[in-house]
Image 1: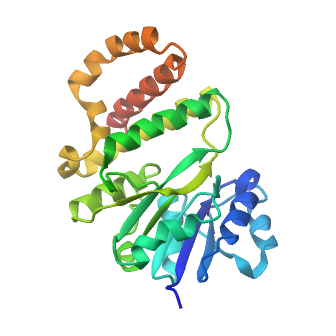
Image 2: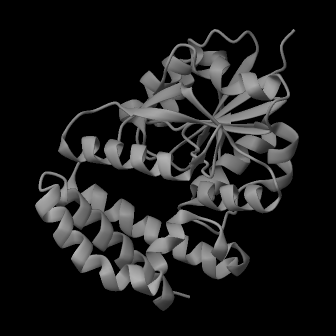
Length: 282
């Protein structure tokens, strides 16, 4: 019998995508896995959607708001030898679970991150997908990657129960986990064939708010853990030279990649505003 796998899916008002997500996860061919949905105070019909799947899906309610708290609540009840995370706005490919967890089952890795495609195709979603591809290539080192993406991530159950997510963080808790795994000497295997389709942010407003939040919480993480300052490429955005040269870089992008420029301008400026704003928040 293959080892048990626990798939944890946090949800907050995700009714629009949750049903398709659960159907894709339950259709996986792996012979032994459980599905745990953690309802993080949804006010829409997310809970009733989970109930409609009956005993196939276990539903847990976590009153403390935040993705870290929600995922920790799922970890607390999970029985799997390996723990897998995805999000309620993802659709898993048919062989996703097997491809993602095979290295853990075979003893080749303690943690693995897969990749994603865009589930929708407007301008903003395509831009996000393009920038994600660039970023993954930057942080990839052969078969490993300096990145944890909790919409497509598998980890040894014992290790995850020991580390957990930092519940003080309202965003980028997977980035924080990546830094802690790296500091502990745990390499993260990259499994690009383990694919989920993700509903990227698809409007200017959501791109601005998402990048502001990411900049804010990455800055907060590095204030909480100064020892991580030498580790990640994401921290390059906080260097003085990077900030000073940003206007010239944006001007260069305007002439070289005019189609990409609206997204680059929105994401880079909102990211830095978030990073600066966290210095004014206790």
